[in-house]
Length: 167
Image 1 (cartoon, helix red, strand yellow):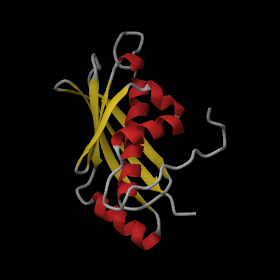
Image 2 (cartoon, one colour):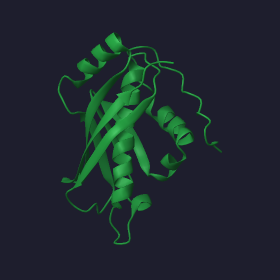
Image 3 (cartoon, helix red, strand yellow):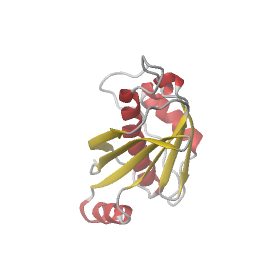
Image 4 (cartoon, one colour):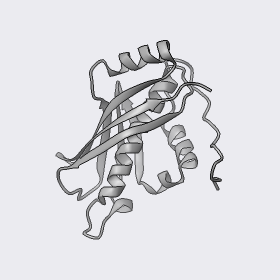
């Protein structure tokens, strides 16, 4: 059981240029953030600069039998945090990441299992982040998240994620 005020042990960094094993990262994430075990994440995969989760709807149902907006908003925010953390780890950085700003637009009800994708908002977002980390030791990146239920785009989200300086 996690204790309030006590940081969870970090996951060892993968070799620079290599990504984390998705299953191992999700297992660590579930220990580090207890609510993750109840989010219904079935699978995580990365394709280039896109991170994708496949999720079950059942853990996030609302009183109407569709997706609960608060749960979906939390998932989109956490997905952005994971994107940033995994990007840093692949590039040899063991840093803390915090969400600085987040917002969502709900476009359609979520009526079944779904997938969420996350990617940089700007094409040069990762290059700017790398440059800021090199120059200033900290940085920020804007990310977009989308929730798809079948072919329907149900939620669009945006978040700014800050990478804190070491130490």
